[in-house]
Length: 319
Ligand code: SF4
Image 1 (cartoon, protein in one colour):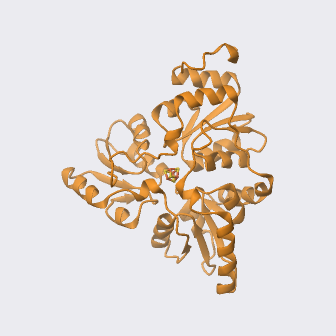
Image 2 (cartoon, protein in one colour):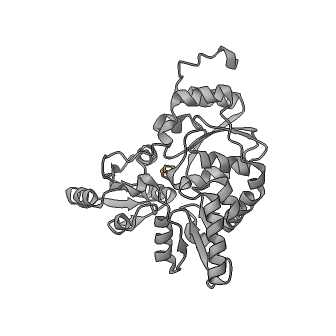
Image 3 (cartoon, rainbow, N blue to C red):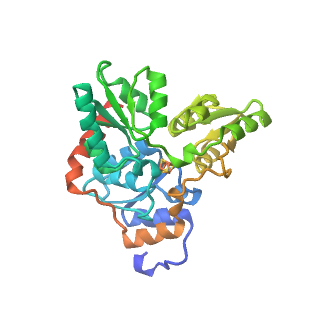
């Protein structure tokens, strides 16, 4: 089917979009925090690490990334010969926004003077390409512990940008990393009081929380896991009830891949849904349009490419 013959206003079924993209040589990647339709339309759904690996492995020269801006940047860095485009260029991330590269470099310089040596800088993947270029190694929630453990014990570490993930890593590794003061607005808004009420109403339910959650939520949980770890746990479980302390759309994936269990979203302070407002900017209509336009495109400025590739490469080698 010729692309020009397709009606743009009428959005086809998700599987038809995927088939059409396949014919056009476009790989659609979707993060697990995207709405169900976008997950169905994608060739591959995953967490940040899984999507980064898929982008680095593809032979195709076009990637449509359903996620937020820093994820599309990562795909563009790992697959420099492919054009990467997104449904909505405004889909950003509060956590990535909390760490500006100028502030980071100033702080690294300050720490070098204070400590007498420059600390190793680790950045959670939820940061801009500029920040990736300014640090030594990247991690995701799934491999963060292994990345921290790979740094010699006597080396000081600066961890950016998520203070909650960093705090959890300090607890489980026994390190005393210096933490950047950033947070994800979605995970920060979980309410511990309503979580405790929910647990009382659902005795026997297993509470899983993401390490981006504040300590008060992690401490009230049965386990702290990245999204890949959560998925593994629910797939291995039978007839369990899980209270899920991460972005609400993750439940779509759980219900699809492990329908034998029951899932209850952990409550937010002001609403029950806990959906990321940035991920929500991507819609089926915008996906359909961007596939036809092959845009808007995301292109990492050349001055950040080499440094960001080095820190991402170190992560992929470590884990
Ligand atoms: S859920 Fe949080 S960390 Fe993830 S994209 Fe949204 S704001 Fe950023």
